[in-house]
Length: 250
Image 1 (cartoon, one colour):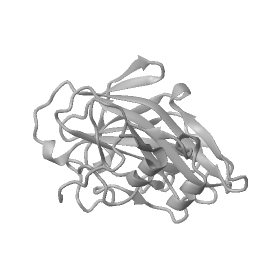
Image 2 (cartoon, helix red, strand yellow):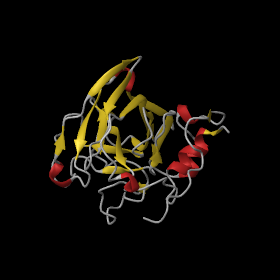
Image 3 (cartoon, one colour):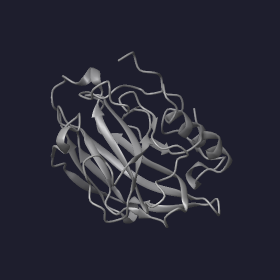
Image 4 (cartoon, one colour):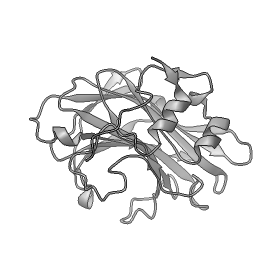
């Protein structure tokens, strides 16, 4: 049954609606159970001028010990928008159609930023296929070129991407989020001083059917009053589950 995209976005970013939990991630991590928001008001630090959407794919905890397979993951239609404070408009700053996706297989608990190379294959029409996460690692990905804006002009961000797998087993889950960056060339430094996160969405179970994963910073009611273009009031989706079932206690 189709549902409104705006409702789907809000549910994906409301705590308690994750479809599973990520294997190998300590339960003490704030994002282990899903939706998090890390900056009051939804905007970046006042002197920051760049942003990127991102996503992570993990084995679901109950699939942690299943054998390795030739599982792969398709990504398409990644888009990032920022909300301009003065004009109240949403401006698109990243688009997968013109912005290559990069990333790697990072160790599940992200210790020391340890990673393995991740195979990335062009699917055509702007989409790509990734190798599935090896045991003990994830898929972490982001657009290569950061979106930019003038300092002090932005108070929220929105990111979405379509994801599917070529086979259900082992069960994979994914979530997406947004990082603010000091500027479009700033290097990563320990402690995330150059790229504090705006937050992340709930975990969504991936299937062979496309799912649209969504993250927004800021207030849900403000999102309803002034949604970004993909969430216009009459937009509906049949792709992702509009009301994901809650995972068993993990």
